[in-house]
Length: 99
Ligand SMILES: [Zn+2]
Image (cartoon, rainbow, N blue to C red):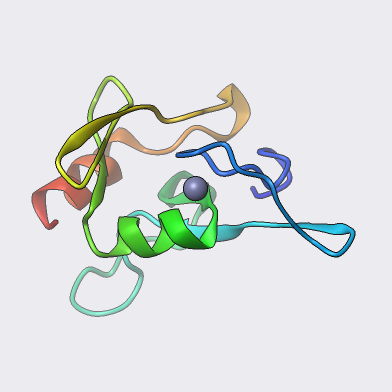
């Protein structure tokens, strides 16, 4: 799914280059481990830069049902999405409820 987003962060649109390779992280929306037990599927993942991944995992970034981003409680634009790799609204709601 990182290729679907060309390794560009869905939250801040940074495309981090490390030497000549783009780098992004696949962030589970609902964590796969106990106690969340999220599914390990593309719909439960976001393509994020390391900074946004850390904020997302800590609940400092959340995404609403209109794909509006909140970062540290402030509006922060929209989540970038492509049709062929759209995140699950159910898992985004779960992330909000547990953040
Ligand atoms: Zn980012």
